[in-house]
Image (cartoon, rainbow, N blue to C red):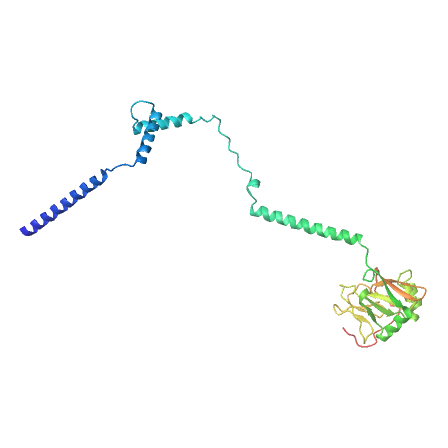
Length: 285
């Protein structure tokens, strides 16, 4: 037990000696002096002269005196700010800050609608001023000599379709002319009927479907709702409110037929039957 105590005392003494030696070494290093170079001495002399100028001629300037002199020089150099009343705060205008998402969408929609309306108006104005080109639907179409057309109608089973005019060309029987002159008196389709030909609009007067011809019944039979018309376009059955509409025609002195597809004549009323034609075979619809 005594041996352990002696060892502990020795360790404590050695640690204290080491601590004292370390402290002495730090003091020696902190107070170490040496010979200053000539440049260093010259800089120190210049700095002391500057410090004396700041505190005035007299005793050597201390660090505190130098600090006071510097603070005094700064305060003399400062210019007091002009006193003014505080500015009233005004909230900024949201329009100047930016555009919200809703504003952006609203403005975009308005801009697109404006452009669309402007484009439509410009197109309509241009179409109004631009002359209508010849040769298309809505204009006068020169179909050819009536004699040639009648031959072509007979060759096609009594029905000749002209897609450029959206029309059917059919023969009007010479035997039906006395009755036809009474029913269609004054109509612009009568000149063609007098020459044995009629131009019918292809559209069904019920709901506007294209009406085909039936090769067996020799009628026009609409596949949409079952309206039927005889070979000259007079209504025979179905929901149609009247007969097929027809176009105004002109016949020149040399027998050339011109059809005005821009002048549509309303079809004959229900019950009109100038030809007395009945179905000549099975119906297609």
